[in-house]
Amino acid sequence: MYLSGFKTFLYFYKFICMIKEALLHASFPVKVVIFILFSSSIFLWTLIIYNFFLFLKMDKKNADFIDFFWSQKNIKDFLLSYYSKFDEFYPSPLAKFCSEVGFGLSRGGKITRFLEQQVRSVISDLSRFQFIYATIGSSAPFVGLFGTVWGIMHSFRDIAKMGRAGLEVVAPGIAEALFTTALGLFVAIPSVIAYNFFQNKIKKMSSTLEMLSSEIERELSDAQDFNESDEYKTEKIEVPLRKRRL
Image (cartoon, rainbow, N blue to C red; front, side):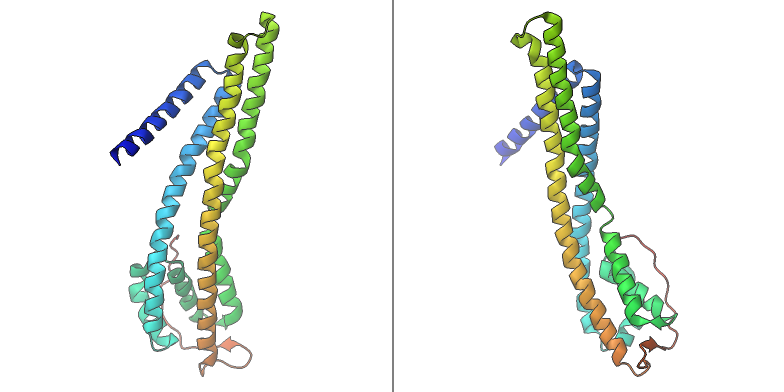
């Protein structure tokens, strides 16, 4: 295990040294490309780690919330007892959804439309970082390709300047080209994997949200204080409006 960790550290150290050498000997446009890709990689991995632990916590809190939901006798008891326990379930998307539903019940309106709006709102909140993964994953290879083209052009300029095509002439430009290509892929591949991973997590949570929404709608529709036009008339329940981010 220690040997494996040492090898990983050694590979990472060599990678940092490669970046340093590339920055020292590269032309200015290639330096800009390397800086953009390297900065994107740091930002990307920070976001991946943050999101991974956030979704891990949300999965646990969602499970706790579902257990609490099914332990209640009816929807009214659930709504009345839920708000004192809100902080216990944070940052569960299901908890946020139900807090908004409870607030909506205190105002009145069409329950079906309101539930659909809240489901879309929570899903949109869960997906707020997806466009970053998609953007980095799709654009990083092309940014690297720009560095590749520039490196090859640099090699041709050196050939024209020196009047010959020896290895010592073309090697710097070719090295720039290959390095920026590799760096672009190094940034893009984890971004695409992260996008698919978190998209799958969001789909699973969306399915759970829709099932919870259907169950709440069924419970409320069965209550005596709902009429046939789907307008609900409940006693006003004083609940706090929670606007926390997931």
